[in-house]
Image 1 (cartoon, chains in turn green, orange):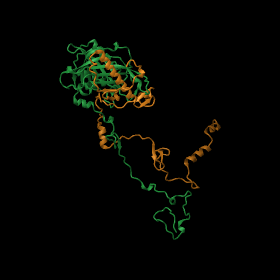
Image 2: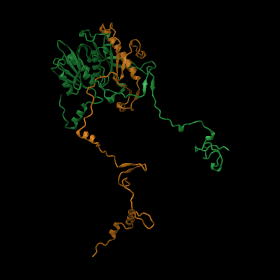
Image 3: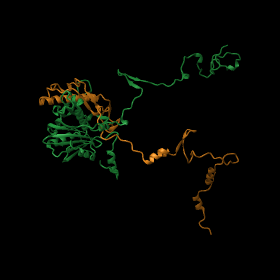
Image 4: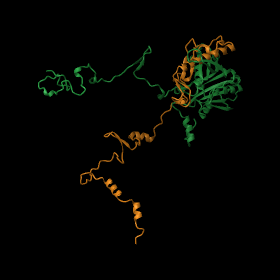
Length: 332
Length: 192
């Protein structure tokens, strides 16, 4: 572990505070690292992929003697030094040509990692020039049942979503909907999970399209969407996989108490989807209860009551109730 | 489809298995299978994938436009500064791992522990105003008309039985005197 130094000035203090664990986290930063041999195709592919991650990217230009599946400590070190929890590592060897390794760290320790071998690659530059603004959030589409069933493909889905989703927003400007990333895989999702034979696993198709919206002639406000491919177009084959340590993953998946939705008391939803609530009513004050109105009990406007003379003057009269101090109609 | 003008094309999409939305991440998870026939040839594959992506994008746009809309300049975030149409995004469905552990509160210092044990609390400066429950007004704690000043327990009384205001009588005396500037001018320059 790197030693933590007490900041000597305000600038370094700010930098340190920015790195601290937070309740609502910063946008994850990415780092591209080249292996000891890294073909031009891989370099271009890394640049193309990372173009959609801007501005949260740092690109390393030098070669590094790293073999992440043998020893990932160098990537962990880079991750810590640059405060980047996502690393895209490119390498190309005789045994594993044109390989991209997606690495993800938690607390600067390796969480999970997998290898994608590029089968076909068409660069952004080969498509018609279409600019997507920097920092726009992509839409995602994951097609194929295998992304819900196979643990390795689940990891791919989680990683790619994490890599490209960018800043977390609560309000989205509709102008910002500019492109969609589609990740698809064939197959019916019933592939045996650990057969050991990775060749039977379906390819992963990575496509990026730009959105074009047209006013629809139908009465709705919703526009008709058309797409144009902007690249890169890559078909991947899944290679080696480093699965997340269950303990570490559990820690990483923890939701802070403050962010957990508050439990609503006394409100339930039954099977039919109806909302049922229990209401607690305070004790009722019966003295202010409105009962039947009678003329005799009515208050006169000028303050005196029916039979305006004071009662004391009549010596022998029955008063309806003597425990009530309200004047009542007298009886002779 | 290409022979129909764009504006006349439908905005609804039919998927065999209904898709799952995760609008917080702007994502859609489609568990329909890819067309195995189309995936065999290169051209047909691209056409199939593009068609699927278009459908997904359309579905997502339809869902997003159904979310509560805020027009620029009313609520938090960027909406305050820039103009435009904003939609309120729901919470994310698909949970992604955190980057760093959940922050833990700082351990209390030796002094904080001791203070808690002894029940010592930090005295906060509450200002010079205090609520007087008798009159129902805010009064000063001290100073002029301050709360700490009791009514004088002994008062000098003049012949009429009214309290003598020492301050007022002094002021009167001062006013009876001519101003000092006048005194200066009328004073003889030198006395010998």
